[in-house]
Length: 260
Ligand code: NAD
Image 1 (cartoon, rainbow, N blue to C red):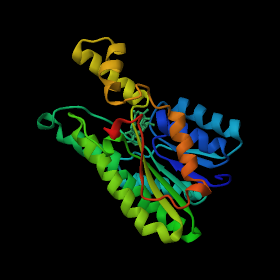
Image 2 (tube, rainbow, N blue to C red; image 1 turned 60 degrees about the vertical axis):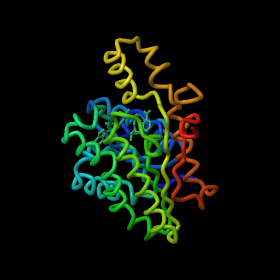
Image 3 (cartoon, rainbow, N blue to C red; image 1 turned 120 degrees about the horizontal axis):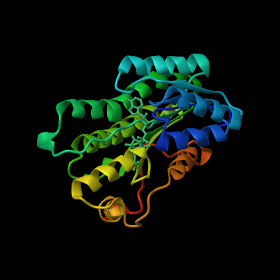
């Protein structure tokens, strides 16, 4: 299905992005990793994936808040691995604060990493997909692309924006056999959410277990974290022939959260 294809996964040194990159490599795709972290750890990760799955794996440290670094990352992918067939926009950060106290610099940073980076990667990768008449773009949005929670104004605004961009690109690219979809996960236990659990425990003077039960999973009716591997499976499904006619959707993967 993705054998021999070239996949670029932003924010793939950790969490959901890493799980997605692993599954794409495990299914035979060449992968460009991206994200921050300790250089030696990232190199171990890159070499480990290449060796375990026998596919080319490269790494770009491009900062997703910097448009020119994004363009350079797509060009580097084309040079090193070939033109991007599968683009997974996953890099994202969170910051929690009442809107009237929200630091403007944080707002700008979240909008640029969580939303604008998707525009810049798509803009740079789409011509290559069009010229080959096939492409898959998967944007990792969030349940917060569909509904809001208090104190997450920038994150919620950015993720709602990702869904608008997803639908627009889907319409523009449909005739070229390129699909563009968004996945909207509920809570997945990754370093991003572990940070929120720690912060909330401190803020409410509660144990971390209690925060998970009463705060974090309060909105998730099945009371279970989503597994990051499930997100990787869904990306693979969206890259499969069964999903050829699925485009422009926002797929909730959140244990029923947005059914309320
Ligand atoms: P994470 O913190 O584990 O990983 C985030 C990744 O993005 C890391 O590789 C990090 O280095 C990278 N990154 C951060 N800033 C970057 C930048 N400026 N440039 C390049 N890379 C950057 O987070 P996660 O939980 O795996 O989240 C991944 C995506 O999934 C995010 O877009 C997040 O909003 C979304 N999401 C997460 C959850 C959840 O519960 N964890 C739920 C819904 C949506």
